[in-house]
Image (spheres, rainbow, N blue to C red):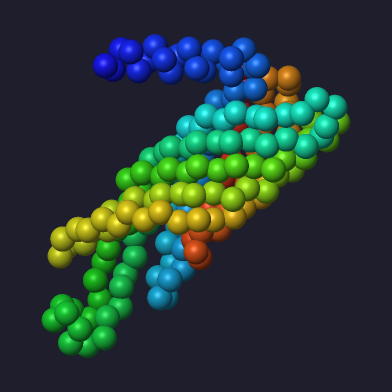
Length: 182
């Protein structure tokens, strides 16, 4: 069954691969949040796969993209508690780590003749984080809709660099990355 599905998927994607609008990339994302007086700044690296739907002789295009990544920098903090709350000391140290970052987005992109492009993108993203302290650990896994925008520059016909900003319900994501078109 799996073999047949794989063959069918391959045959369906052959026309898409012939159009040469696929790209793969990688980058770094800084994920920050400030909630209830606790500031967090986490780092993640990600890989991406994208497909550009471009119309001939038009500077506008749409790009669908899938990103998946993992944490590379943690954040530590100190949580101040009210006296008597949870029957633990007045403060507790904790550590926050990114276990997984996943995002699906669709860009509306404007391509300039000089290789620069601007884009806006709604996204649907998942952030899986683990919080640990001397009292134990817990993880949180949530999906959120967000909106963002960015700028990119084609370095050659096949490579480009880009930077973007996204916001997901108060969580800010700043990314910098590169793409290779094939």
